[in-house]
Image 1 (spheres, rainbow, N blue to C red):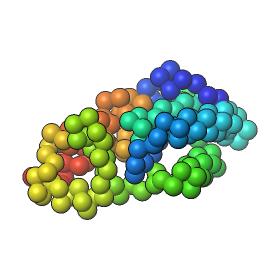
Image 2 (cartoon, rainbow, N blue to C red):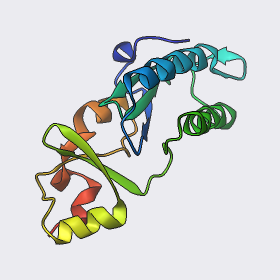
Image 3 (cartoon, rainbow, N blue to C red):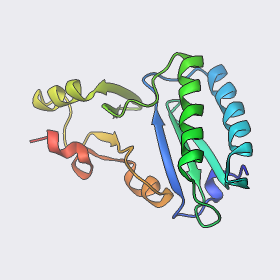
Length: 161
């Protein structure tokens, strides 16, 4: 059951998929259409999952699930991963590689491999004040408070001296 992402309770579970490039406006329209269709039909053991989504910075797909009504099971999580894998194929984009880092450079979002980000930290090209995206957050409350934060307040801090 598709609902507005912004109406989901703070304890709702979130999954964040970061793209290795920005989506075009046309791609965003198509992805939104597919997300709506997927979520509208997303179930757990035949029961609807109350879910919503948002796309941030033309680069992040965020799916939220109200677990107060129904929690996702292995099969429903598998279905969502298969859906994301299909988006990867259809749009020639990487959404599942967790070994990459996105961060802000002014108003732009940059994307680097973890190795490159680590080197940038050594070279002082990024600092503890660099805004990073912590895609490890688990709930909407964490997403609101701890997703877009200075590197010093995220797991990224381990690379900064």
